[in-house]
Amino acid sequence: MKKRKWTIVVLLLILSIVGVGVSKSRTKMDKDRKSKLEQSPNYKKGKFQNLVEMDKFNFSKTMRILKNYITDSHPEKFAKVEFPIDDTPWNFDSKSDFWFSWLGHSTVFMSLEGKNILVDPVISKRASFVQWMGPKRMHPFPVDVKTIPDLDMILISHDHYDHLDKHAMKEFADRTKYIIVPLGVGQHLEDWGVSPDKIVELDWWDVKNVGDIQVTLTPGRHSSGRGLMDQDETFWGGYAIKSDAKNIYYSGDTGFFDYFEEIGDRLGPFDMSLMQVGAYNEEWSSVHMFPEEAVEAQKMVKADVMLPLHWGTFDLALHSWYDPAVRVKKAMDQEGMKVVFPKLGEQVNFENIDTQSVWWKEFVPDSVYQVQEVKREIVLEPSLLVE
Image 1 (cartoon, helix red, strand yellow):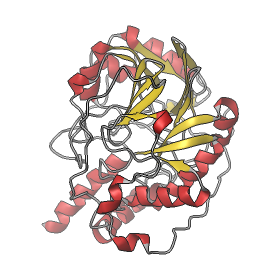
Image 2 (cartoon, one colour; image 1 turned 90 degrees about the horizontal axis):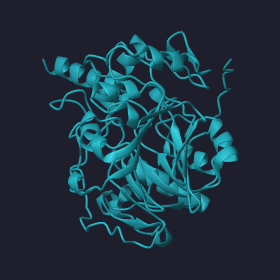
Image 3 (cartoon, one colour; image 1 turned 30 degrees about the vertical axis):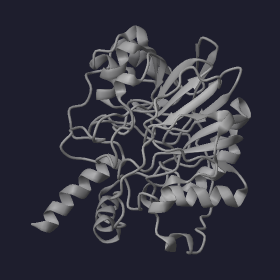
């Protein structure tokens, strides 16, 4: 009985890793939206394609991951400590032309030249198709959602449950001007009652100007889907967010690939990156970067400061909750590069970034800092030709 329970739990976790639920998929895509998808060079035979091939999940891989979850999961995958939360009210009269607050996982609030931007907002207790099972929060959402002001834009990287949250969309849709998403994702929003006038769908390298801010959807190496039958029917990506004052890069979820260099050449250099660093494993390395790869990506996109994302909120892999932070901190320090770890909910003025404060260190065993440096070979796989 215990083994059967483990099997069910782990299979659900595997589905969560690849962003799949077993709930009903979205309604059938409307003809106009479908026509736009079919015009994309990245869309073939009803599916979006990666520029670099990704590993496929088959039965043998699923069984291998199941075994690993049972035998190799780190005992501190889920944090048993109380994370510090900065509940100081944000100062919207700040003279800084760019400030931000990390709200957990990949959710970030940014004020850029007075424009309010919310990235991949997830406010639900679980990153799942239901709220009674699936990856659970390690900490509460750090701010009262009602105190988040009207928004100029929401940016969504893809439709997996830990990035596109139905509850967040219902909370914020009426008080935002635009919700910018990759191709096809707008169908989910319309199904949830979001006005089509607010939805902006982009292909890779497409641009949306919101006032003086230029938003570009950038390539990523990932996947999409919220049900068992809609895999890769909507697109994914990251964002370059540029104003006269600052240039910001958000990686979205992605495996490591050579298009980081093109992103840097075309849209960089960047003042700051919001970089995915967690939920990695060799079994799905083609869709989630390891911390050392994220540091290499930081160089390739020509970014100055890194804000690590996608860690410390949802248990989505076998490693400890703190492993992404420890490894990316070590790798960035080794390269002499700047990385910032703000407390949850903390308002950070870009001009006053503190790269020395590391709030999580008090929760990490001393032995972790005494082990040999993690070495990972950085491999660029050949790109696929997109006709």
